[in-house]
Structure formats: structure tokens, C-alpha cells
Amino acid sequence: MHVLTKVFVVIAAILSVALSALVIAYAVNTDRVAAAYQEQVSLRVAAESNAMAAAAVSGTEKTRLASAKEQLERDNATLADRIRTLEADNARLLTDKKTAEQERDSITAKIAELGETVKTQAALITSYRDEVTGLRNSELTFRQREIDLNSTLSDRDSQVEVLTQSVRALQEQLAEIKRSASGAPAAGVISGADQPFSYTGPVINGRIEAVSTDAATGKIVVKVNVGTNDKVSKNMRFAIVRGTETFVGHMVIVKPDLKWSVGEVTLTAKGSSVQEGDLIKSRLE
Image 1 (tube, one colour):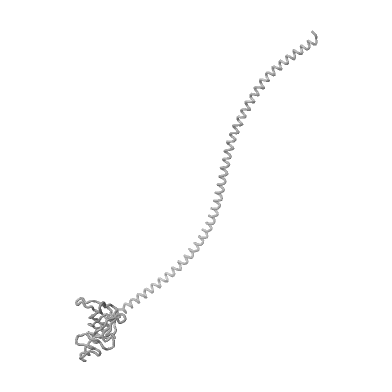
Image 2 (cartoon, one colour; image 1 turned 30 degrees about the vertical axis):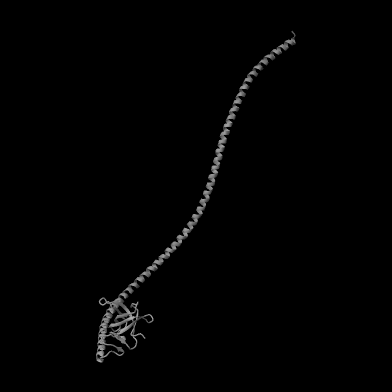
């Protein structure tokens, strides 16, 4: 065999051994690389799973944070409104405080003024009390004097009444004496004994003050406002009229007095009745 061939064989053998080593190394590295690749694939899948989980958690967290943000924004708006409301309330309260202070000052001034007024009124009341006391004492004195004067006047009235009755009795006695002395009726009288008569002198006018019925005789009895001072005498006949000469009836004097007389109605017109206020005339003209 040729030397070169031997050299080539040796080189081929060496190269075969090296190739074998390389194949072995390649096989070993291939398994290691495949295992590493598989491991990397598993890691990538795990990482992707973790990333997806993290993304899901992140989305959930993002949603929660967005909701929290919206809630915080709403809370912020509510707080802002609350702050504005509180500021308005604060301004109103400050205004009310100022108004209350002014009212307090006004009330204090009024209290002071009322205090002075009370003092003035107390002084006036004291003055009025003293004045009223003096007036009451004066009134009591005046009333006592009035009582004394009334007592004196009562005594005088009693004396006057007694004197009046005495004068009336004397006048009646004098009139009776004159009639007895003359032996005839007074001038202007047409009469018989105890018979109604008509007075022919100046017309005597009067008015009926009261009307009543005699329980014993059933006759109508009237009281008139004329008497002996007006030349009225017993049994004198009067005509009773109402209004403007409306004839009502006749009456006869049964009891004359100085300023009044009592008479009986002897005749009434048909459909008429004697009333208070009717006029009487000694004759119709």
C-alpha cells in the first residue's frame, strides 16, 4: 500500500473518530437543545398563561379602579356640592348672626329705653296715686257735703210739701167760701146742683196723661194735666179730641186738683176709644 494511501486512511480514521465525536456531541447537544427548547416552549406557554392571567387581573383591577375613580369623582362632586351648600349656609349663618347681633343691640337699647319708661311711669303712677288719693278725699268730703245738703233739701222739700198742702187746702177752702158766699156758679158756668156743666169762659185746653178702668163701676177714668189753677172745677164737661179736631167723646171732672184733675168718660164716638195723649177742650169751637 502506498504511503499516501496509508496517510489518507489514517487521516480518514482520525476524521471518522472526530466525526463520531462530533456526531455524539451533536446527538447530545440535539437532545439538550430539544429539551431546552421544550422547556422554553413550556416556559413561554406558562408565561403566556401568566400574562393572560395578569392581563385578566389587570383588566379586573382596571375596571375596579375605573369604578373607584368614577365613585371618587361622584364623591368629589357630592363633596363639592356639600362644600358649596356649607359655604352658602355659612354665609347665611353669618348674615343671621349679624342680624341677631343687630336685633340684640336693638333689644338692649329698647330694654334700656323701657327701663327709663318704667321709671317714668312709676313716677307718674306715684303722682297719679297721690292725685287720686287727694281727689278721693275731696270726693268723700264733697259726698259728705252732698249728703248733708240732700238731707237739708229733703227737710226743706218736706216743709215745702207740707206748706203746699196747707196752701192747697186753704185755696180750696177759699174757693168753697167764695162759691158759698156768692150762692151761684162761677162766671161762665151753666150748671145745676151736682150736674155736669159746660164752661162758657175762655176755652180750657189740656191733655190726657193716663187712662184706666174703675173696677167698681166699669167706667173709664182719665187723668188730665189741668186743675183748679186753670179754672177747672168739679162736674165740668170736656170734649175729647184727637189729632186735628177728631171727636172721640166727652168726659166730666170728678176730682179737680191744683195742677191736675181726674174725670170720667161719659160718651165715646162709635168705633173710638180714649187713649193717652188725647186732647181735651172745655168746648169745641
